[in-house]
Length: 215
Length: 215
DNA sequence: GAAGAGTATATAGGAGTCCTATATATTTTC
DNA sequence: GAAAATATATAGGACTCCTATATACTCTTC
Image 1: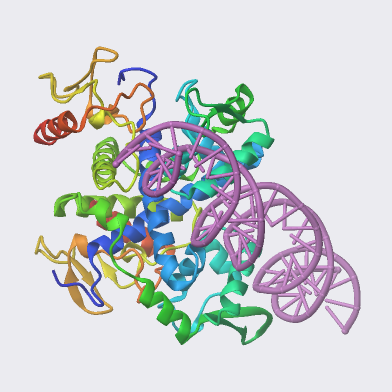
Image 2: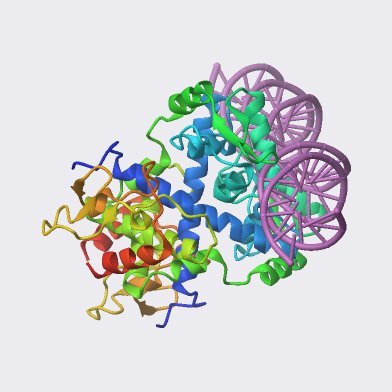
């Protein structure tokens, strides 16, 4: 595994590459934020809350999903509350806790700011269908590893969902099955953040992953 | 291309996935920053300057590489200057301009903070050699597209370098050649940010890329 | 059933990021 | 040599982000 000079591990170069792509995504987020009056962190919180239903999330959960400290999450939640984009509701049965729920106003701003194009779209546009699918599987693997290591909260991915049956069908284009919607779907349709996600228990998560990998 | 429900484009899910991995990398950067006393942005600037030699970079260039506004770059450069991690030297021949150069102190802090492991390493550890190589190629494609679109400054990648000859050798394990070190190397050794990079002119960049893609 | 331990959130305090708009000092161009 | 362009700095302001700690509950345990 000789390299031209100053050998770096491939993981180091992958990190560099991911970081460049990440930079483009940050620029996208700022552009998106200009129209809305909310900065990227605030948009990230609303995005997180969107589709989690009326139950909302606690402050601590939001912090974990954003990868920031709890006081930082409180800061940003307060900023959004001032702007009437969300509200804190008392949690029934625990008077210390709070449920953070987006307002209709907040969801409208979020929706309006979603242009759907930008630098991330440009970058992904360099890839053909096959490469996109491979990238999706690669990212899912990486995210799952982070979950298993308990470095990030469980994401709402198909591969950790109770409703997911990998390679349940013979059809190579649509081998998987989702019991929630009771329909077959393909590798490229795997979800990273599905609002109908229902976390499976650890044992069946592991079994599902094995079946997914073997398929 | 039916999906279980609420069909999202695959690009949307890829963006989500990249964003999760990016979050893990941000957490890494904060962890790294704790020991050093420099925050992630400051470490990013030093990383950028490291290996660019005594010539350094201008404020505007640094801003472009970080994807932030010029005043923001000035802010962070000043913070680093206060901490004696870099200095601003007058540019010979242009009295408006400045060359930002890291100090030995700054480089030492940078080096000391580089643990080499962390969440990014964990995530990448879920991949086998083949997947890592594919991911590297995918990222290079994406980054190149962003460069071509002039969304980000030219990165110091092999595929835009004057010294790079793609598929110059019959050896499938080491098909490429670097004229700077005059050695053959493989796909998985492609650089994302090589300090010996020498940007080729647009015409030969395009020709090199075509040859690289065809190979 | 009252300490004590643990958990959920808020506050305090402070450095620094990040923006837009604008000022200052030079080059460069016509 | 005036106007246009360029390189950086300043001003002003909203917030992010941290650590440490306070406050208010809830759960455990003797």
